[in-house]
Length: 434
Image 1 (tube, rainbow, N blue to C red):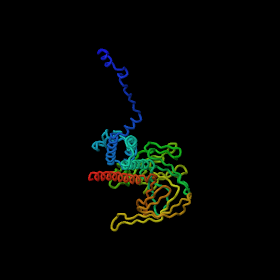
Image 2 (image 1 turned 90 degrees about the vertical axis):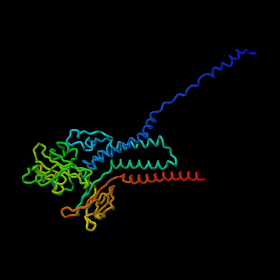
Image 3 (image 1 turned 60 degrees about the vertical axis):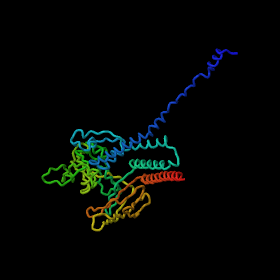
Image 4 (image 1 turned 45 degrees about the vertical axis):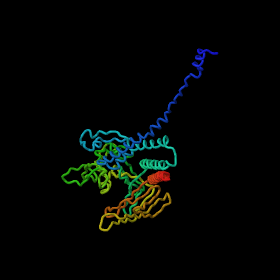
């Protein structure tokens, strides 16, 4: 028989393997990619981006007090980084003459914020959202928002817009961009020339003090550049600003650029005072060039040796491989008003390279012409020197369907989401009443 001491010893000493503590499972470190995805999909990031976007829209709207709509669109929204003037941030309480008015604060532009919101939305779907029929409406709605964002991106990157102004009986082959300008030098020595020989300089060149290019017949010294100007006839008591050209009889003064809040929504009339010099440095005189001077008086002529050139500041032109002739223009107004009721243009299209010869078209409001990837809208109509002039807005935008498609997709998503919620609500009501 076992003694109590022996029994106590046996019962108090369990097998050694039963006393060993279980090994704690080693936690696996999270991978870097899931951490980045979780941060990118964070709702806090979403709220921050929405707040930053609202502030950008507010500042961009405020900037239109002194800046045109299209300049605001390009400088604030269709850019990665925007430099906001301190004068705008202070709600224009800072005087324009203050040295601080030249200070600019960096801020994320529309494309950067849009790209981050696009990334945030995709990351949220990857991390959190699982496809269920009850969530189908939200997923489709988000797909529509993505389409809308892509539509704005492709429109900003690739869309081309301009005006084609044609007098009755005139044939043109170019489109003008009234928001951009060019200083054009054209060789007109041979009146029977079949093709224009033009050298064009754009805004970056005009902001320099001197323009010298091998294909230019003379050098150009930029004395004054004005983004917007006012022109009036010079009186005998006023000293001439320039020595040659139509501008010798005129006075040009700088004006603030047209703001986005202008109720008339006019466009700027840029002007530039230049001195032309031969390649060996001999002065050919000073000239005043502007949109208005070119429109009223035509380009200025400059003679260099035995050649004659025309020089003008005009809206930037892009040329087409086809021509458009205006045969007739009709303008109808509402009775006893100056409000337009209908504009209508009868044109003849010629594109021999594509087998189009004297093809007639009728363009009127809400009935554009679509040809070779471009759409010609009836935009306006006027009178110049007794002749009717039609204005056709020319748009090339391969992404033009995306905004319409995105609205349809968003609407379908909202309807489906509302329908699913309504079905769930009615099912709960039926179960509660039974």
